Image (cartoon, rainbow, N blue to C red; front, side, top):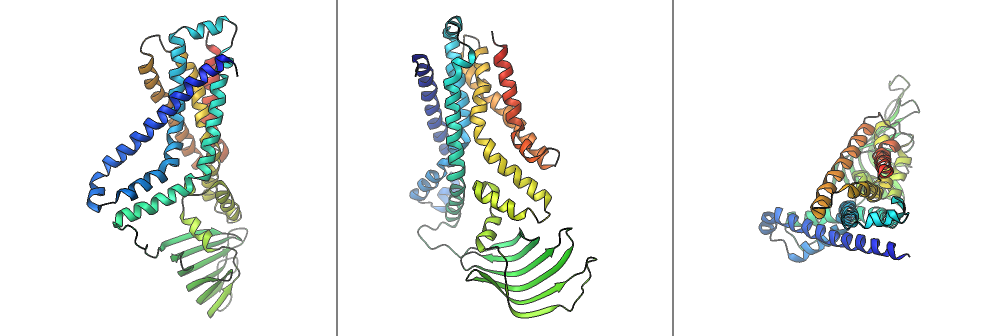
Amino acid sequence: MRILDRYILKSVVSIFVSCIFVFLFMYVVIDVLSHLDDILRQQTHYTLLIKYYLTYLPIMFVQVAPFACLLSTLYTFSKLNHNNEIIAMRASGLSIFYIAKTVILFGIMISLLVFWINDRFAPQAMLETKRIQAKMAEGKIGKKEKTESLINLSMYGSKNRLFFVNKFYPSTKTMDGIIILEQDEEQNLTRKVVANKGVYEDGLWKFYQSITYNFDRNGQIIEEPQYLDEEIMTIPETPNDFLAQRQRPEYMTINQLDNYIWKLSRSGATTVIRNLKIDLYQKFTAPFASLVIILLGIPFSLMIQKRATGISSIGISIIVGFLYYIVDAVCIAIGRGGVLPPFLAASLAHIIALAFSISLINRLP
């Protein structure tokens, strides 16, 4: 590695690490102070608090990493500009992209790290923090958790099936108040199953007190309803599938979300599938916000005047980051409305930011 590259990288990395520690510390302090009344009232043990914030670290890192990248880039290049070092580098024949290549590679590495953490650790961390929050709310430490039940659960299954469940108990793999609607390729209702209770045993669902209705293409019942005191149904959905449906997309890994979308692909739930595809593509594009925001920061840092370098870096980083996330939120909202294809909705803000940053860099003297 060239001496110049080491010089720039050392500055960027040191500021990035410092920003991460400062942001994480401020995040924890602000969160504790904002919930101090609840913590004192519930007499939450300090070990539970420590466990909560340690579990939340991957989520916090994913959220603050882009701003740390932006601030470190702005401060480093604005300082080089302030000391006339950029002029010296340019006078020696180096282009802006060549000067910034080390920072860009650093942004790629941070983006890949965020992608890995966001997919591997963040979903599980979110689920664990929710469980810890529930313990805090109950004020119980070290006691056995109550049996969890999910209420009013709905799910699009394979083979054009729609499931509606009043209560689902993951621990016992049972459900109460079950309605299953089966549709054909044109989304016409063909079959309806109503059962009081369902139990998952040996890889099969066993329903009790079930009534089955069959329908023609006009939605009229064509046979006498069939009542069974006990019925075994060969449906591929497992208790884990129902449990995953209750989770929001951010609680799922890429593989889990992709498999769920595949199961829904023939259900005809176009709006649900479109929104889930946007969430899936966001898991690929969102981590690269660190790289995009570094490219945005480079031209702005070189435009900063020679005075008030630090203050200018902080102010511009806030403005640039704020505008970038506004554009991203607007693109996602338009995509969920069906105006943009899912992949374009998830990546359009990145494309705009990249084009804008490259245009600004090319215009620099």
